[in-house]
Image (cartoon, rainbow, N blue to C red):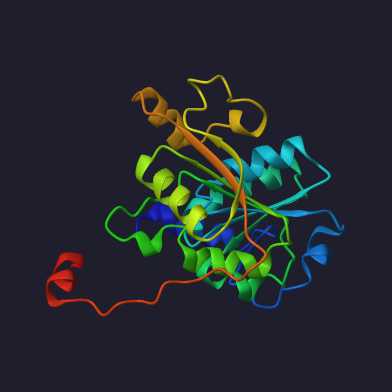
Amino acid sequence: MGHKKLIRFRAVDTFSNVLQYPKHMPGKWHEHFQNNNPITLELACGKGEYSVNLGRQHKDHNYIGVDIKGNRIYNGAKISLEEGLKNVAFVRGQIDHLSEYFAVHEVEDIWIVFSDPFLRKPKNRLTHPRFLFIYQNVMKKGGVIKLKTDSKELYDFTLDTIQEQACTIVENIADIYGKGMATGPLAIQTFYEKMHLAEGRTIYYLSFTLPETTIIVPQRKAKTEEEDNADE
């Protein structure tokens, strides 16, 4: 591990706004924030640019960035502490363990911003049914999942998943900048978004709600030897 990463990991351990694998927190987030305001998650938050900027704009709302990489969380957590953003926090933990960190229906909305599209492993995409099933447990009924991505593959995959799972589309913008729709929260630009825009990539936005019925998670199929070799 690099010296800089090691310093950041040590610093994150001391940050009051970073909770690591917080299995003691379901149903207690209002105590952490000292209010009963709605909670929005930013999944695979990286530097937490969305959590920080939304926290600046909406003091009547709580934002929690979730990522497994402590050295990434460091940036957003440090800025939040320096600016006194008491409505912004970070969780270091696995996204597929959200049910261990949040109580049933404790989360209002979810942002997924420029997450890895996992072109070779669709089951790892954050809009795969196995993740939607987890979100359905922790989100309030009618809560909105918001995807912002430069990946046409992830965008198309999510559209297909929405149809298959009887989700409801709230907003579908195939080119937010080309259509002049980069306003409000969509105007927030992460490090990766600025880089993608400089390369001329199209930015997609899709928001949707989950169905009343339980999300159906496809059964995993046994891998062939050829597929196992392809993953290595």
